[in-house]
Structure formats: structure tokens, C-alpha cells
Length: 346
Image 1 (cartoon, rainbow, N blue to C red):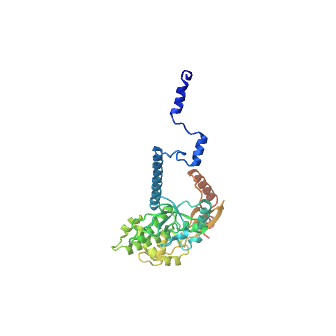
Image 2 (image 1 turned 90 degrees about the horizontal axis):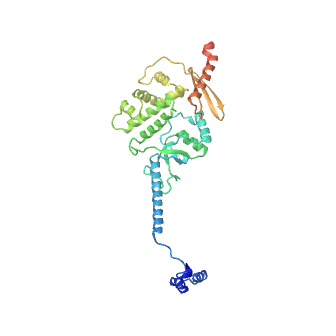
Image 3 (image 1 turned 120 degrees about the horizontal axis):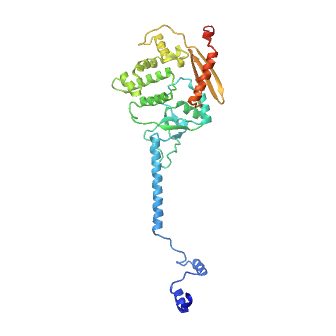
């Protein structure tokens, strides 16, 4: 097709539009600093889009950080705390030697091997504290108050590990009922774990009642108190008596943490605690306990007043496995009569 065109037209076409610089000319222009040596940066739609995308990314990051702050304060996020920065303002509702008990030592072993499954409950010491918006999980030098989870916190400290925690609801904090609210949070957490003995449970309930009564201007009835903490009204009177006589009970009974609710009622009567009727002295509970190892864990088999219990941790057995275990125990008990049946009490 180009053969039919005049050479003059072709030449005119090539020179009619300014040609791009040859590479050598371009290099010389760069060296000489000519203003047209480099192409100008585009200031069009592409740059505006990039700026908008960066702004949106920053907004999304800021929102995510703010949501993390609110989640931590609401107790919806697990945080890790240095256990040495946790204060214990209300003390324990357990026996005084709880750190020497087999259950605590087993817990230390479990956390060492498997980590801490259940977080503890805390409040920030400063009620107005908020996590750092730029780094919400940075809790260096932030102090907390312990509400529940003393054993887990102590185990973490013993192992030199941070303790996993959640912030409990701070509703009603800053009032005369502060200590009562802290005691309730401690009690409910222990109730859910079913980890308190009868004596510990009654002492805890009695302590809560006395604390609420001291913080309230009006008289607190047993019914009102029972409703607030979620227990039966009939427990309140006994709990108050046990709390007031706790030192006498501890001095009179060496096995107080193995006593049932009925045994404790008898103990109150024997001590002449007001509001209880004296009953005949009962034989102290007979207790036999044997501990064996199952792998790295301990299995405790205990007999107290003809009641047999088997305790261990770290085994999540299904219904079929529990049924098989029950049959093994039943067969053993059938073929090995207790001492009482074989030849009378020892």
C-alpha cells in the first residue's frame, strides 16, 4: 500500500509530529539537567485513588484498634498480665495452706505442660484506665486487682509465665459495695468450677453477707441477700454462723475441709453456736486416701465415711469410656468386700 504514496508525503508525515528524543540525545539532556529530560509525575486519577486507599486503610486500622480497646475493657478479649503486677485486696476463700495441697501442685504441673485454659478475673487498679490506643495489648507496668483465680495466678508466677486474664464487669464500682461486688465475682467463679468445700462455701457466703450489711444503710434480709448472690435462703443463716465461728471450727476439727454440710451443722451445735441445737457427738469422719500416678498426672482414690471418690485431671472421657470404668470399679468392689463386711470396723 505504501508504494502508491509519494515519498514527499511519507517524509512530511514523519516530520510533521515532534519525534521522541533519540537515546543519545535523551542521555545528554539528563546530564545537562534539561527541564524536559524526565517525564512529569502524574497528578491525575491514579494518585487520588492511592491517597484515598491509604486513608481508608488507616481508618480501618484505627477502628480495629479502638474495637480492641473496647473488647478488652468489656472482658471479651483475653489479655496476658505479669502476675507480679496483680494485687489481692480481698484474699482467698480457701484453706490457708492451699498452696501446699495436691490440687494446687497438680495445677502447676498442668499449666506447665498444657498451658492455662481458663483465664482469671481482674479489675484494673485505676478505674479510669484504658489500654493504649496504638498498642492495646501492651500492659507493661499496668496494675490489676485480683478477683478470682488465685491458684492460676500463683501457678503462673511460680512458673515465671504471664497469666491469662479477662477484665470483669466494673458495673457499680466506686461505691460502698465495692468489696461486696468483688467477693460476689470471686464466689460465682468458684461456684461455676464446683471447687469449694462445704466449709469454704459457707465461709464465703457468710463473708459476703457481712460485707454487704456493713456497706448498706438499710437492713439486709436473708431473702434479699440470697436473691442477689443466687443461693437458697436457708443457707444464709448457717453461712453467717460458720463465718463468725470459723476460727473455732478450724481449731476444733482437723478435717474441716472434708466435712459435709450436715457435719458442719453438728460442729456448730457442739461448739454451742447461737441458733443451733446441740446434738449427740458424732464420730469424726474416717478418711483413707491413696494417690497413684497415671503418666505424668496423679490419680487420687479416697474413701470418707464409706463414700468412695476418684479424682484426677486431664482426661475427657466420653459416656462409653465412663461406663467401662464404672464396670471395672463395680467388679472390683464386688470381688473385694470392704473391711466392715469382712470382719467389722477397725
